[in-house]
Image (cartoon, rainbow, N blue to C red; front, top):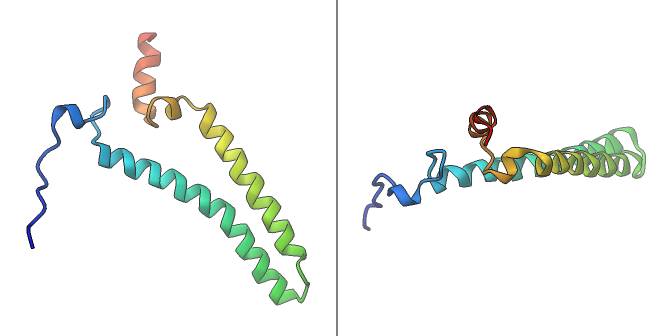
Length: 101
């Protein structure tokens, strides 16, 4: 089995802020995973509370609404951020804001 070649990325493969496409992929994977956990955790907590307290689906419904609205609020915040439109890099945004670009 051949060994993968982990050579340094070519200059045209690197984002403007110096991160490789793989690093940017990790950034986006982290953002998406955190949003999924924000939605799933309240639902799982609602299921657990329903089983412990003997309610039918009261806390499950509350968990669904709480998780959905938390995810939507975070998604809107992400869409409004400058980082979303510039590749999710706050350091680069600060430099551009200071220079006026």
